[in-house]
Length: 409
Image 1 (cartoon, rainbow, N blue to C red):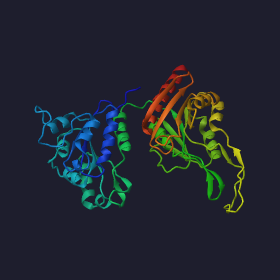
Image 2: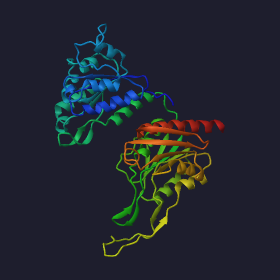
Image 3: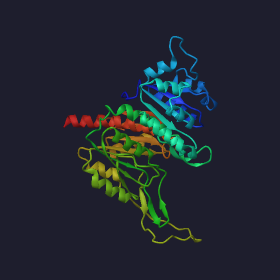
């Protein structure tokens, strides 16, 4: 497994007193598992929501929650931490802490370390929507940005207080990806110069103007792969069925609905690609006839005659010349058997197989547990992890395959 850009980085997480403090636990865990040296600083208000022992267990380092208590009598903690940090991120950052940062106050571990550091400082606000939009808070955010601090804009949605709007802490997975991108931008461009097509999401096969056949695919896996490949330098085309996801920044997007529309879009662009990663869950069948009016309910038992849709992946396998072709096998049983069969029948370079009968991974989940099957017979299993990390592992393998193919030409 390749080393990632964030392994070995010392990251300070400042946790302040908001309900979103529990999300800092998730961020701490992800960064620690990724090989970062994570040190958590807490305000006294933050301890009202999460205990220091939780962060100590997750980070495997002592937690700093009192500016006057030194864990090592030979060091001044807030100075030592500030000097050795590669990045300081305050998540969640309350309106109170943002105000202190704006005006140079340093009466706790978090604000003292920020004043003492020369490392990059990121601030992730989390608060009630009305507080967030208050002129004083917005002014303070402008001030800290003038210091060079980066503000991670909060998400919109239902807040803990019951209001709906901006103010929700950026999700830990998204913060993790921002950190990974920050440290990886300087050197991890191993897909630069390659043109990659990714398909994602479900398709919809119309029955009448209000009904259609579809599946449970959310598109999250394909979107994560498209985003990862783009960040690593690739020129990415994402052909997506209907999803509720925002397209990744910097990625060209073609939106389709039906399997036939996806087929046409993929075939149109296939020849210009270096690789195709087909994660879309394309309907195998469509109604033979589509009613132009809503089919009304009757006492009869209506029947819908179905016809086969073209097999996009199989057609790509027949047409491919120099392209790397990667397919996904979403199965509910006999995973090994069906994955190996798909690899051979469809002339793929790799199949990524996952068990969609599980409720904790796969469709609609943020996590996945997959097995990679290769043409040379190798098999590699990844235990359950966020889809963004699966995407990184897949891009690692894709980069190796493309380099190998390039070297053999």
